[in-house]
Amino acid sequence: MLLLTVLAGGFFMAWAHPSDAELNVIASTPDLAAIAREVGGDRVDVTSLAKGTEDPHFVDPKPSFIRILNQADALIEGGADLEVGWLPPLVLNARNPKIHLGQPGRIVAAEVVKLLEVPTGPIDRSMGDVHPFGNPHFTLDPLNGKLIAERIKERLCVLSAADCPLFTTNAKRVEDKIDSRLALWQKQMAPLRGTKVVTYHRSYSYLAERFGLRVVNTIEPKPGIPPSASHARDLITQMKAEGVQLILMEPNRERKTPAFLAQQTGVRVVMIPSMVGGSKEAGDYLALFDHIVKTLLMDAGQQLP
Image (cartoon, rainbow, N blue to C red; front, side):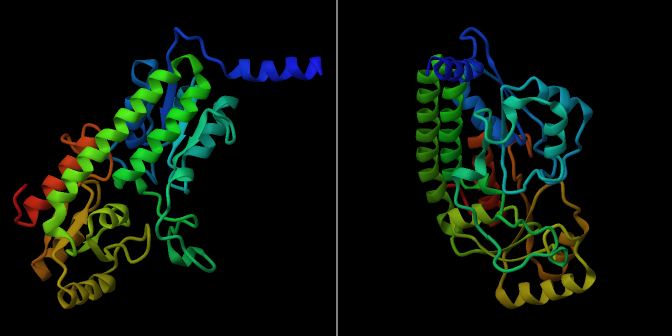
């Protein structure tokens, strides 16, 4: 019994963190990094591997990332296969047991949100880059940001118990800010409820669900598959028939196809970031939504209430 007690004590001590040192937190995307900074405050040093201008599915796995992950106390990832093409080999080569799956230092955001567009039935490569667990772009629903903040708080409290009161206070502040701002955003977006849109990728499904936009199709014929001429022709017919009003796309997508669709249909192309740092205006998580809402209203010919 004494031996078990000592061993158990050793396990928890292994995860203890000196109270005078910052936790080194690595996030796969800038959205997750932004939330972690708000929750951790001055007790964490946060680095995002992806940039806000990148496609989070296809981040260049730089060798320097291995060193960064080797020194991490925690790794926050989106999960739901968002980073499956680049993050797992980096974690493996980093040889840092603190950030292995199942450890307190590995935080998977998808575990705490309700995923949309979960496929049913068999999946194969002919369907494109379908995510078997559902759409991983869930940070574009502000309420998911609240859930992620709470999970980050819980894990930071495990990693640095002495700082748990601070993390708890900060997480509550984040959640209250989101609630307050969401009420404003929903009021501002009310004129656009029911607006039919086409998106380039399935990046904006959660945004549309939260604010009442209707996504009728995507420029990609299948997830991750470049648009073909035949798909573009079919899309033009559908957009005209269904009265699509906006084309939504990230600034890092190719622009030739959206421009052609706009020319053929008269529908406006609206470029909005899908992550923090995707534009100079989207400097943090709340600013991301401020900018998206303002841009959508302006391009739809609406005024901010």
